[in-house]
Image (tube, rainbow, N blue to C red; front, side, top):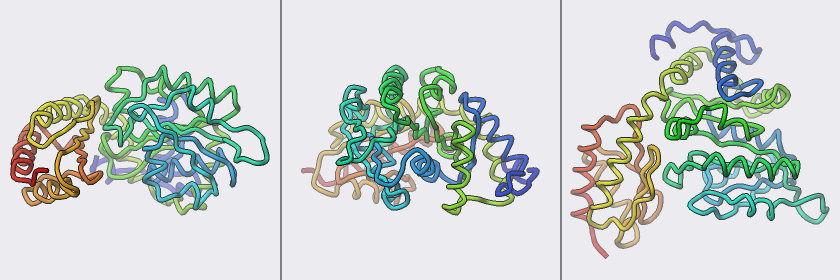
Length: 330
């Protein structure tokens, strides 16, 4: 990947003539069955560009209550696009199509107009849960009947692709637009791709410029993205196996009250104990060289990736076992 970056042919992507970026965008679009793609610095920017194109100030976007777009993008839909978020509670982070159908609002002047639905797949706060393709297709039918756009926050969509064996085009087909990360599981240092129709991407390019996401000789990053797109998915099988092993071992440890069903590369762990016990475990593990994340007073999040091998998993389990055994109980 570093060699590809060093040897990348570059141009000016703001002017649309960086050949490496254009190649990456074209390959990504073809893979998911879309007309065009746009390279952006981050998944958050890709999602927020989609909001800005699909909705207008005062409109409403429906999303799952624990979704990334709602929780972890700094209120950008409201701050940047003037769009109101309407979070709905999912069942294990999956929204029911009937729930969405009943939540969609029409043209009544007294209420915000529903312009967009966002599905996150795999679902970060759901512990890497895969939103099933059949459920997505049902949501897509609901949206098309109501003339509402459907966007995929697919930061980790390749984890769903690999885990299910269903090709990327199948996952892209129900959506009007898709964002996926070249970083995270695929292993590039930076970058995401936004996909859609040619007209959607034309409008998206203007919004990207407005947000400061237009970069110049960015082919050095796109070159890393090409390697990630071609080679990254193969490594996800091992990531999933490592996460599954982590989950199974953690479920047997002291002070662990629940491990969320682990389908891909994220392990979510709920702890017994006093308020703040998760931060205590994180600190103990960090001191031993194992980095995990507290996602609540009593919850932990562990993510496997290409730089974590089986020996690293065993080392992490050893450290976590010690941290949980030494920590304060309820």
